[in-house]
Every structure is written in structure tokens, then in C-alpha cells.
Amino acid sequence: MKKLKNLTGLFAAVTLLLFISACGNSQKSGDQDREKVTILYPNWAEGVAFTYLSQAALESNGYEVELINLEPGLIYGELSKDNSKGDLFLDAWLPNTHKDYWNDYGDKLVMLGESFSEGTTGLVVPSYVTINSIDELNAHKDKFDGEIIGIGSGAGIHASTEKAIEAYDLDFEQITSSGPAMVAGLDKAIKKNEWVVITGWKPHFKWMNFDIKYLEDPKGVYPTDVCAIISRRGFEEDMPAVAAFFKKFNLNEEQLYSLMGTIDAEGEEAGAEMWYEANKSLVDGWFE
Image (cartoon, rainbow, N blue to C red; front, side, top):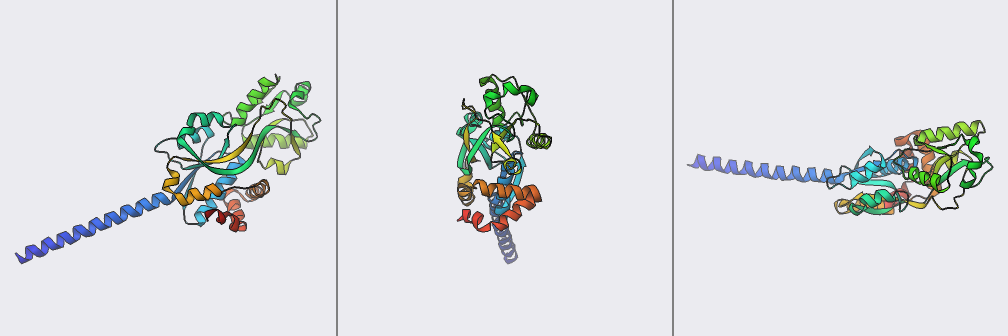
């Protein structure tokens, strides 16, 4: 009987230890989940810069960060899901350029802050081009080969440019490409002193690297926006400290171009890490 009691006590002790261990492991797993931040981003120069700077800062402060590259429409759609695989998007052009995306998904998203507060879009030409307004384009169609070099059709500026073609009755075709291809086309034309018109926006590193200008937009087709930071619903409750960081995350034009220039020279991860270390007091101040 005594032996049975001992075995029963031993069984109870083992059961209790297993229960405590399971609870501990479960809590640990939950903690790990809460410590992981997943940022969705498109291949836009400023969005890449915001994203990789955030990764450098968050990882330096003890968080695990996953980055997922997607088209903008897919980013909005993913963040709006109840079981979203992502947490944040740092380059939402609102309230105008991404208005359609916000109309579709905004009621399931949360706007936390602004990564950049003075976003502009429009048609851009080299400064040596002698016209200054969109409504002068048709008179010089041959010099531009009747083409506006754009980016992906999912970008808000692509839709704005289609509206501009209609509003100004332009005899031009918008050429769909990518951000890097658009910049390459600009670079090639400038080296040959040729006329070229592209879709453009600020912030973007091309303003640092080329002598270019916006064409005036008298019909007001191209809007002024902020680069907003949006999250899935529930993110702020799940990770209040990280949400507080992104509420303060904001770069001015000089800071952003410095960051983008470092990334252009050193690569995404290395450049962002280098810029973060050089500006650690600024960035870590957003955690306070």
C-alpha cells in the first residue's frame, strides 16, 4: 500500500511538472509570436528605405522582423484579413493616390502615423526640357516619342496618369515598367540630352541624382499625399510598444534622401544598418 501511495505521488508530481512545462512553453511561444513583426512592402525606393530602417531599429531593440515584398493591392488586401500574415505597411500614399485601395480596405485597417509627410506626384522631365506644363506636351509629342514612362499598373500614380491623359487630352501612351526601369530610362535620356517624360514622386532618390522638374498640373490631377503607416486591426493591442514606435516614425526630406543614398551605395540591409547606427539617437528616440 505504501508503495502504491509513493507511485501515486510520483505520478502526480510528474503530471504537475508536465503541466507547468507545457504552460511555460505555451507562454514562451506566445511571447515569441508577439515579439515578431512582419512588414509588407513594395519595390518603391522610399518604401524599401522605410522598411529596412525599421528592420534595423527593431532588431537592434530585440524584435524579430520578417519582410515580405508584394504589390500594393496585395498588401492592402492581406492586411485587411482577420488572419493576416502581415502587420504593417509603411508607404501608403493617402488620402489621394491610394484612395481606391483605402475605399476597398480602409475600414479593416488602422492608420498609425506618417513615415513622410510631404508626398507629391506628377509628370517629371529633365530641367533642360523647355516646356513647363502638362498641357504643353501634345505640341512636342514627337520629341517624347508619344510616351510617358510609368511604373507598375497597380501603383496609384499609374491611375493618376491615365486620368491626366484623359483630362489633358494627351496623344500619349503610358508605358508600364518598374521603378528601376523608369529611372534607367530617365538616366539614358539625360546622358543623350534627349527629351523624356516619366511618372515621378517625392520622396524618391532620383531627385538627388538628376536635375529634373515637375511639369505644372493646372487641372490638379496629381494630388499631394502623406506616406502613411498602416497596420492590421489589433496590431496596436498586440504590440503597443512597437505601435508607439511607428506612431513617432517620421523622416524629413533631407533625412530620407540621406538614408536612400546610403542604401543605394551599400545595399538594402547594410545601408539601412549603417544609417541607423549613424542616426541611432534619432531613431531610438521613437521608442520612448
